[in-house]
Length: 132
Image 1 (spheres, rainbow, N blue to C red):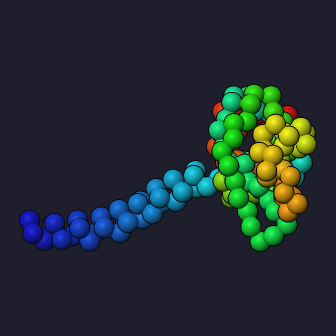
Image 2: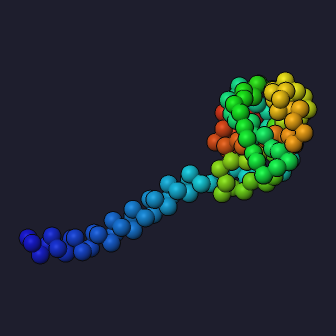
Image 3: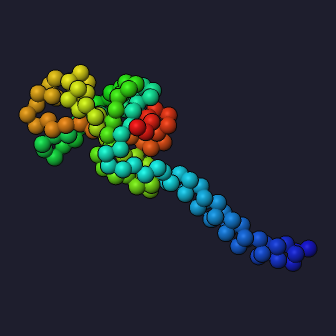
């Protein structure tokens, strides 16, 4: 009986190890395989969405503040995001129209203020955003 347990253990351990690694690879592939987003791709907000507006400055500094993207807002991707990346950077299509009511005046009037952007997770496409 003891010999049988050793034989089974010696045979099963490598098989269990291989199975566990294959299973982990499948799970990781599902989590990291995302949609590819091309530069210039447009999205519309289909459900109000809370996020952070990143403010950009003519200085080595980036800041942000909470914001709600209202339904109907159109966003444009500013760079390509391959399938291995979980998020992409975008800006409102009507940038000036968005900045005026949403960015506080003290930030807008600062001479070093250079713009805004959003980082959107791809998992939100189909939930809060749709392709145009």
